Length: 466
Image (tube, rainbow, N blue to C red; front, side):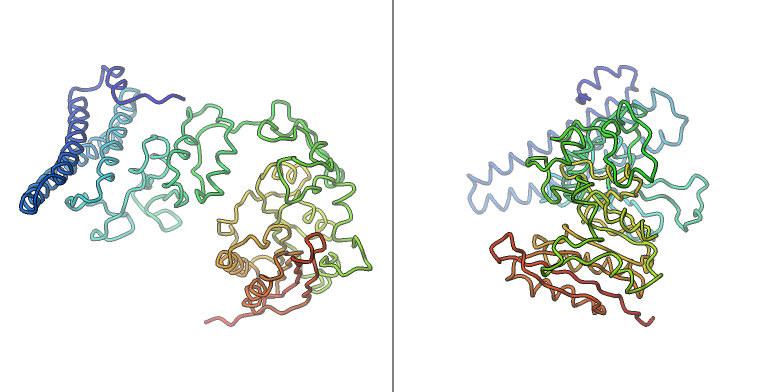
């Protein structure tokens, strides 16, 4: 949706009160004056001598203080005006005025932020509702220009002015810290018509998530769906049968159907599990049959692992790249598995759901959405490999330890890395101090003996309370 400039808004909204027009114009004049004085000062520095430099520096300091005071006064006036709008009944006219003021406020504050060398007066006393009056809080909504993202990140106070059942005086909607560095992409993502159909921009959303803008803000538009959605297959069929092609939006993928994804061909848009859509030949035997039983293998069978804690493994997490086959296999053993995945080049989330399993759309950047000591099993394969940074691996493993209950199992399935890096990676797993049920290292034969596979089944020990 094309954006309107401030000038066009002034031309369009002729019904806006005179005071608001004057206030907006004053703000723009201050912004222009601020830039002109700063650049004028910088040019004079280049031709002045040492004595003049001192005089100009003193004069500039006074100018900077005056500009800062003026900006603070204008910002305070606009904040007051916006608060008055929020306390009055909503009309179309008031919404337009509120949007106009919010845009002007964003422009002024962006000018203010672009001049870090100016020593301005302390900011307006903006106290957090849960903190004392002496502690100031930064308002994240001031970083953005799009009104919808500003509304989302702004703290929402409870209507009755009391603490809610969670013990908070308001709701603090959050976004990932990298969202501030990706403002252009985030504002594009949040630029839509409220109540309309969302843009077909899931790929943009995933880009934001992968690069640290996670969690993403909620949106007030309806997500797109396939034009013709057929009812899914019964659970007895869906686990090991390719889903109906109509139930996926294929516009953002190279393959346009599941048959293409299942074919043993290259350039399908992903590489981590080239055969994982081939349910009948590649996926069906996994974890119940060894591919080469007479050779050293990094694979463990499902019953071998479950028998280590017979009757105790009921729920778990699979943090892997795949189509949910591990969860399907565990379902045959009456174990419920949630599959963490992301759509890198193929509709992994849709595939898992259409098989009758639970996909968890999650990046490695995010803390697991489970409470402490709740899961019986965590399994990972084809994901945590030799690409991962050692410090990041530590954070991931400690988070897994947090959600895994005492006596729970951590199943590292075919982790591969360079042989030279193996000892460093093994130290990361050893630092958990888990009991070793299974622990094997075998060569990875397709890479000239330079890489190895590592697999293990580890048990979290009980830890005393402090």
